[in-house]
Image (cartoon, rainbow, N blue to C red):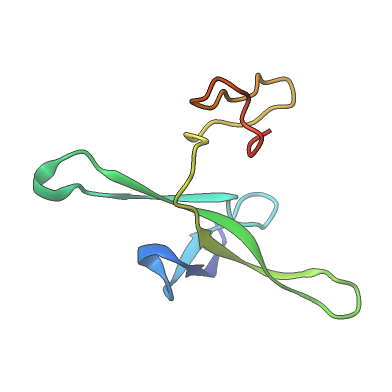
Length: 100
């Protein structure tokens, strides 16, 4: 299995570079979840990082690599988003425009 050194931006992992396993396409996963143990043995907190392009080439605009950016407002819950899925309902009772 191939791994790629990937930088992290924002949140508690800011400035760190970790080896991340690549999938069959050669890209790291779209989201990277890091469980952090809770204080005094409480429930763990999940840190969520989203994959974003590190940079683009000048001539063709191809992606030069990937980095992970902290996403403190993750509401996906680890679920896949399919085109035929029902939209998420915000606490106000209206469909959430940010996710759909």
